Picture 1 (cartoon, one colour):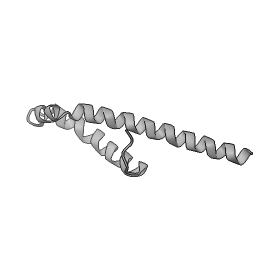
Picture 2 (picture 1 turned 180 degrees about the horizontal axis):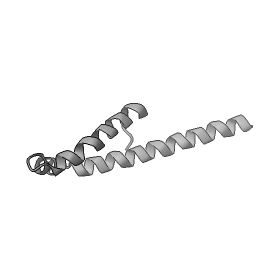
Picture 3 (picture 1 turned 180 degrees about the vertical axis):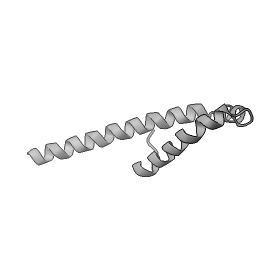
Picture 4 (picture 1 turned 90 degrees about the horizontal axis):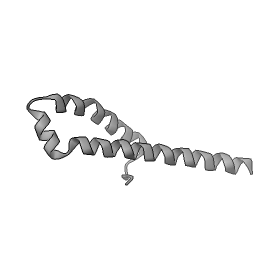
Length: 70
């Protein structure tokens, strides 16, 4: 499901999550906590949402280009 925040804000949050999650999961202290909270699954869902957002942006661009061709 696509969240209501804009693409730029979502990408900024995804990038931040990508940077921090791997390091925190490797931590002996924070790793088990994050795994219990489902951080890996949440990151996977964010990646899926980003791909959906990219597909929608490509589709919008193609529609715009097609409307100019008419």
